[in-house]
Figure 1 (spheres, one colour):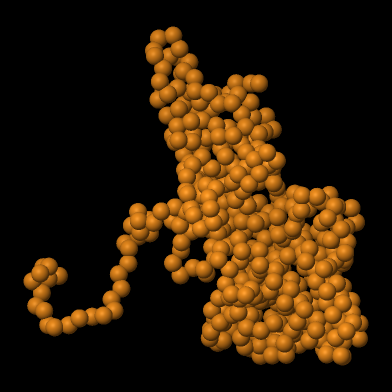
Figure 2 (cartoon, chains in turn green, orange; figure 1 turned 90 degrees about the vertical axis):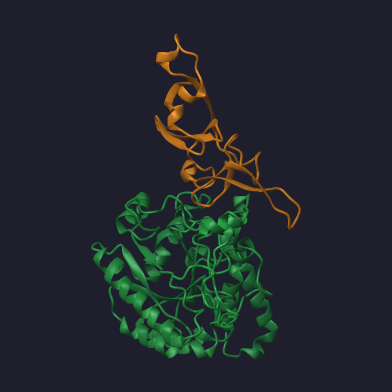
Length: 352
Length: 131
């Protein structure tokens, strides 16, 4: 290394050079709280300082949700679960390159099949989700076909982030494959407003609390799209699962859609019954994060209004920070309704 | 109310805690900036082990767009949903009167062997929980 000040100057001015703090701590000295806790460069824009359950880190090292023995201890055995439906978080629908998105989806599926659905799964407690990216629906359909007949993949999944509502026809190769091979199509929050995707609010929310509350809006838009585009008419055996998209909005949204249908049926002549009448045969919602008003009777009324007995399935979202405990998340339910939500509806959908 | 010796004061420095099992109950004992507090180790929300959560500060009430970070080391955030509790009182920040966790008395008492003979300082005392 040349001694400072001794280098020969050659008449060059470089107008783009990058330097970095040696560590995050070096920057932190200049960054006051609360921002020190919240800022992460190159993150997905909306962050929560909690992230995962703080007690879910595997004791032997490794992040939350990485150790099958600890997950069994903290979730499967703690609550006596018969099965867990696993949904990896690859975050793919935001990627501009469809070939990359397809390749990473396949990698996640191979990984899940080898590990959580294979090596860690002697007793078959784990059932998995086949990841697909929606940028190239024909490639996604081929990926679904690749896993047809696998004993532990029970559904296809994708991120809720999208460039267009999921009922539109460009996605149909995916639904055709789902129907053909008997996989429900699950949508899980993620990649909304990121990369190539639209943000399902009028512009980007400011903070995580706003972003996270409004995640339900994408699910509502996708559901109305599925119903009005006639996807369930075209694919009469297709099932759609809305995971972590909210629960108690469903009934009022269907009241509104059914009311619209009475005057606007002429736009969607393929619907020969009210949109809400498709739900029981085609749509399931998972429960977490269950909305919990101060007065339980309001939630119980909404559960009745939305036909939870047939379409709601319990979920915990383990190990994420907004985990719902099977013991404490719900108010006291009638035994038969509890059994439907916590067990029967999923058992029937996934043929467990 | 029973007396339980938790540890020596030198074994629980500011920011540190001990979770103790008393009968069937679990209680978290905290050293928050040199003062000692104890809370029931169960979140009133969904029963999470509250006392393993982050002991931190938080943004204090302010006008929109203003941020006043304070109470460093006195706010306990539940390890699951992050609900914030005042470790000095057990009261939640979002609704102190309706959402709170039971708190217990903690005292610093002289080491038994020193009772008769030495003047006692916090540095060589015992953290004692009354629960």
